[in-house]
Length: 121
Image 1 (cartoon, rainbow, N blue to C red):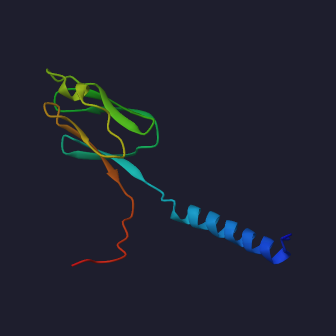
Image 2: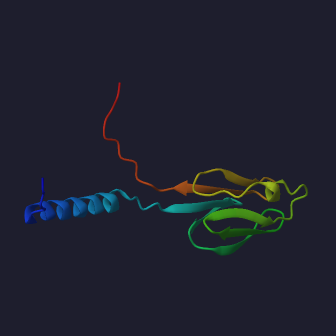
Image 3: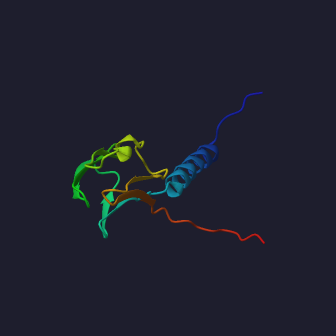
């Protein structure tokens, strides 16, 4: 039994591949993760995907915050116990870094749009 591939079979395969590629790229989300830093009553917003050094004047002195490879951590702080420096870096998965004596709170906000396609009761 000898099966030949016809032109219509090739067209169906090409259309299926194009449809799969379109579905893959249309379902890919564009996550806009932002860093929200609250310091002495002020609020600062930064992009998590842009590497930078941030220097903020807190209640007791200057803090040095690092954003690198979509992670953020506190590098220097004038606080006494340095607990904020021991906190692990946070990323788009959430968490926070807080320096209570210096009145600094760092969080990551995920701005991904949530779509509800069904409601259950």
